[in-house]
Image 1 (cartoon, rainbow, N blue to C red):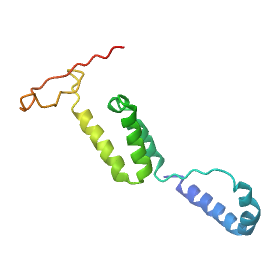
Image 2: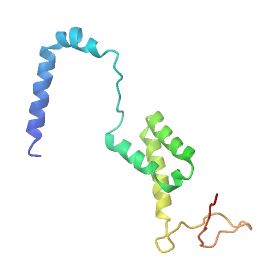
Image 3: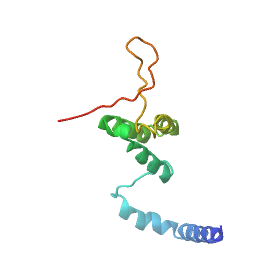
Length: 127
């Protein structure tokens, strides 16, 4: 990175300025913002982007509650494992998609309890 020295230099200059002006910041400037709302970013921004992108998957758009649950779990838990589990489940489902059939296979067991034959369900919805 040709610009790394610029980032380090800029950070160092601002840090030193804040230290030099510490009292003024604490007594005069920061109190001006005491009523302002703040946002805390707990994860890298790209993680939020991935969660949002995955939440737009068609299976989560069939039922708004499913999508909301995924977003709530990822947002409220603060644990990467829940986000990764949801992403893995969606990736598994996507891996089953047949380009040839333009559909997902019907993996439900047959009424006799035997393994289903490889078939694709077609559902129609009308109002």
